[in-house]
Each structure stands twice: as C-alpha cells, then as structure tokens.
Length: 390
Image 1 (cartoon, rainbow, N blue to C red):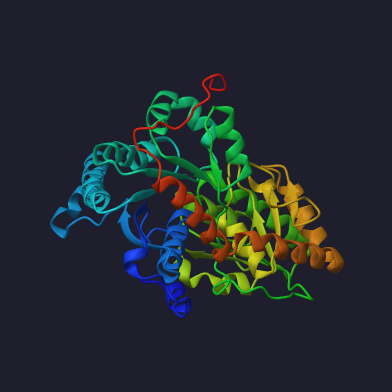
Image 2 (tube, rainbow, N blue to C red):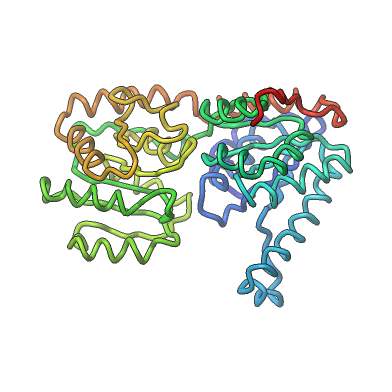
C-alpha cells in the first residue's frame, strides 16, 4: 500500500527482511472512507517503515473485475462475489504468513470479515488476532451470541482500542488487550488558536449512528447567537439528502458547507481551518476523527457515549453532553468559544492525551502483541470465563 506516511518515515533503518515477522493484515481497503481503513493504512506503513513486520495486505472489499461490475447492483450477489474474492486472497496470504491481524466491526461485518479468517487460520494453522473496533459490541455480543462465541473462542487474541470495549468483552468472559488507535503526527500537526475564529467542524459520515442532524440543529442555535459562525461537514452517507434538506429548512445554506466525501490523506486542511469540533454520535468507541481533531488543536465538544469518555474528560480535555440534545451541544460549544482561558486549557490537556496515540507508541504495543500471539499454539482456545457470559 502506497502512503505519504511511509515516505515520511522512510529514513528509519528497518530490520533485515529475514528478521521480520510475516503478517497478513486484513482490513477495509484505503479507497474506503472510515476509521478502520485509515488505521490499517497507517499501521501497514509504520510496520513496514520501522522493520517490525513484512505485511501482506488483504482488502476485505476486493475490487470486482470489470466484466462483473453489473453484479454490484444486486446486493446478495455482490456480497457473495466480494466474500469469495476476500476468502481467496486471505487463504493465499495466510499460507505465507506467521500471523493474521484482522480488523473487524460488529454484526454481519464480523461474520463476513473475522469468521473466514478464524476458519482458515485453523485449517492452515496460522494464529489469528482479531482487532475489534465497533462501539456496538455489547449489542452484537448479545444478539450474535452463538456465532461470536463460536469464532472468538478459537482466535489467538482479541485487541480493542478502548477501555470501554475491554469492559464490554470482559463482562462476556473474554480477555482482551487494549491498544489505542493511532494518529500520525506528521499529518495532523498541533497548532495553537489564541483567538478562535468561530469555525466549527464535523468529519463524521452522514449516517444515523453519528446523528449529523443534531450537529446541524445545534449549529443553528449557535449561529443565532454568533452570526459570523460557520460549520463545515466533511463526509457522505445515507443521510446526505436529509442533512441537505435540514440545512435549507433552517436557512443555513450560507454558513454550513457540505463538503461531501474527502480522502483521508486530504482531510488535514479542514482540521487546520477549524476551531471547534462538534460530535453528536449516539453509538461510538474511540473515533479517529476526535483524536485527529485533538491532535490538530481543536476543542472537542461531543456526546458522552461508548468509549469517548475514555479519552475525553468533561471540562479537562473536552466538553461532554448527552446524546440527541442540540441545546446542550450548542451551549457547551459557545462556552468554550467565549472563554479563551477554558478553550486553551482544554486543547492543551487534549494535546497531552494524544501522546498515548502517537503512531510510534502504538506500533511498539503492536510489536509486543505480535510477539505474544505468534508464539501461541493455534490448538489452544482463547480462555473464556463462562460464568461471566450472559
């Protein structure tokens, strides 16, 4: 995978290829917009640049041959074709690897991405490490209890980015390792904002989980009190038309900029040009967009859901509000904007938190995790405390 990050890190002396662990890393491809895809791209670049591992990347959404593109309009056939391509690529990569590192989310995403790797890992006797990223884990592990227990029982390790997910998995009897999401400091450079310019930003996809309509309604309340304020919405999704209509209904077309989808390697200028990040998600884990905002020096005002309070402490590293509460989101944002001392205190404390998420720190944790998992006997099931499971 090509990456500007790998070029920036190319000056580091890698280990000789024969000393590197051979890893198969399966994740959404870089052409997808989302936290898992960008985390995978960053991790592959850093692992290769530092000589930690030789990585064979397997896209979980492989490209469809041109003559079969028509199948993409048929949902069931599209899923079957994509899964067939993924399994074929995964099998070849696992046969050449000492360890599989598989990114996964919840529900059917877990079944289609993690389950094939677990099965093939057993057949090919390759340890499989599951890297779970979904804030919907609690509901997933309850509703998909049989399938999750069936496959998680035979992985060689479960890694989650947040303390919130550690707790969710522990309550079901699963032991996990916590390795936080990484932020590339070479891409998201911190800058001071001694005089905030009343520019608000959201880079979440326009999906129900992230409740962008609440962001727009909160901004309408902000704009009524601060007429010069602007809001930039970066992202696309199933609610794009609904959000566009809401902006028009609230007469915000002149001050709300709907940018649409932006490749991750082109998103940094939007952080640089904003002051306050607004987040209204109703389900979440450890969103990369909030970490990137903190790393760039923005003040984060967000709902207190899932694992967000793991790294954002209300009044210390950001401001937390209840979900689906536009007035509370607006009041908190205005509080930060109108109090320069508070704004500065929040962003300075957030800058310290980001040190744990520096990509170099995170990759060192992965190095230790890989060393443990690669020595694990694939016939030894993951320890599950059945007494904790529902």
